[in-house]
Length: 574
Image 1 (cartoon, rainbow, N blue to C red):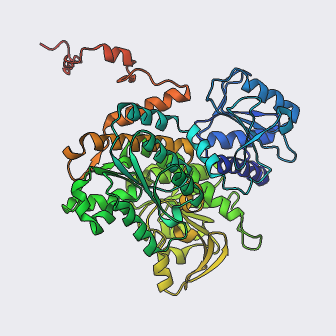
Image 2: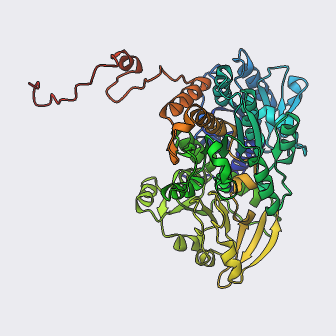
Image 3: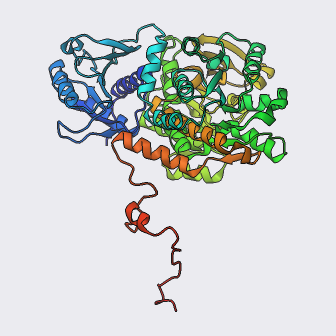
């Protein structure tokens, strides 16, 4: 089958990335329909969307759809939008994307006055409170619009809202002080406000490069103390984090375990009064497990990252989409004399855990030839079976246009790897630890850093050809974009709320160790997510197996009846 021409692939990729950027929404699992357009363009866009995990809607005009991608005439689009808007269930968001390749495909004036839902997204109240327009040919308004961004995030976080509402009704969090230390952007602000609405006293800290000051101000106006500033120095960040800890939180909700470790280092007297903490990253759990093995962990820490409804979705689909899209957006914004041509190029993914899987999936959907490097032979074999080339990292980078580290391990992209990189290749991090790209070691070896664009620098290492390093090797979706998509963080934050419930209910009974999330938190989160998606979740405790057993059949079995495990393959047992 012939490959699509590079220009068409570039158009489709740019349209999808623009839509994801201005909405901060996920592509995977969305039901879409393409309206009009050149059949060749339709095929490329369809293949890209399905490659990213989106689902084509049924062919009928009345089939349920989440996204209309309009490529044809405004008349075709108007009819399709009106049909999709009619009798739509309340709260079921419809995103209309004007992806006209050469001229607009949607007449925005055809639907009456529009409102600004968030920069780059227009509401259409004359049709429905749930219909929104995005134009891939127009740059978003230059306006932080933090309040609008919070409202937009909240509407797309039904799972977290449902779990928080149950906590509110039960009154469990009243009198509990919760310290939130996460990437401070609209979704985190919604989580903080949900905790506050549920009765908790909430206090927030965030690192400088993870702070949206406009969002922080919205929280302050809502009565949530925020210890964060995007302009804070390292010393000031430490003081801000300690100020948050000095409010004596009972529970910490952390990302990277930096504040959990800080309380052990600088405020150990607080540990006896704490119920515990919840940590949501792989890289954050690693040092905590070491501390626990040494008997140095003074509180139970719930491993939110290890929850299935976190790892299988946040790490794979959320981080995969957001890190790759943020990387390509930064490269595309470079001046012509600096910007490399990555279209249809080759990419290397270091690490094939859940994040690496997601990064590789998105890169392949965008047309990259992907090679995976992983020191774990089982994961390398898994990548091979998934259809990727496999090679040692120092060899793979020699011909790569793009190198993305997804290990969460320091010095993954070592000085030797940097020296081996192809001239002008782009290096970015989808992991999350300091020095995942060995920048300090490279500078010590004589490397020169030269800024060439927003969050892009040329790193020239002696003995190497020089690379384009993105955001100093920081976790690119957080430090250069708006983090993971809203629907993904809705799942992760629902798990965080479940971890908070665990700690408040029985934190004083848990071991001073890294403890697993209760399995029912995963089940409840998934069932609520299935219900709000319209897919249905089945009865509690259910789930058919390969033998066709249904949830109802399993539930009908008396709970006190032991299953008969004897084999009948050799006749009835005596």
